[in-house]
Image (cartoon, rainbow, N blue to C red; front, side):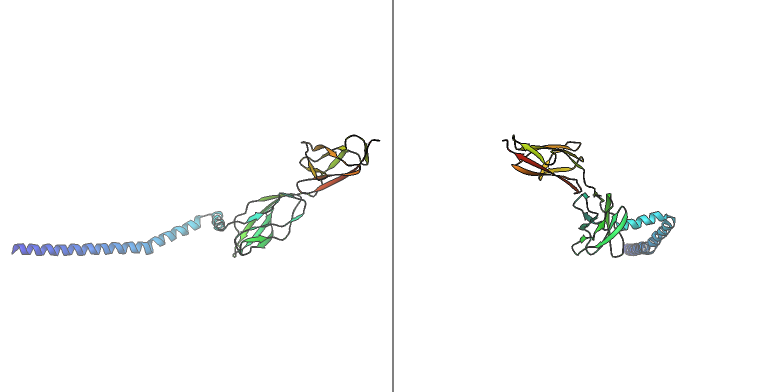
Length: 245
């Protein structure tokens, strides 16, 4: 009889323990749920409010700028570094169906719309004499600008190179001997020299000298100096060859 009573008591104790354990688990779950749904969000919101109050305005602006860097800047294409033209056209690629703002010396000059494939072509852009620093920004539909593209330097020069011909003098007559004449002269260092379309080598100071074959009777020697921007200076010399009598 005592054994049966003890067994029944043990079962009751086990049921009570199991019930307490279940209630404890439910209580813990409710606490976690309340923490995740109400306590933690309110705590984070309070921290954000305090941080927003304490954060300087320049830091807020930095966050805004960082958001703008999420889309890529344009890629500009200018196939030359020097030009003798006061206006150029810029091509390139950016985000499809967006806009590209072109800046020269940090001043916005023009905007161009991109095509569905991302390509764009600007209208003519005016250059200043000397070096022009050019870059672009992609503009989205909310008028947010990307970070600047790589800066390209374009040198605008409309001054013709100097060209002095020391030999031969104009209307020079050569009688007998080899059918050749020596052409000597000087130009700006770094300039290209052509004699009758043949490129001639210069020294470091811009001096040149070349022996040129000629024909019987009248010969026209054309000497052309061309700088990196495409400016040209041309001088012609007439040379007459007469066979020896």
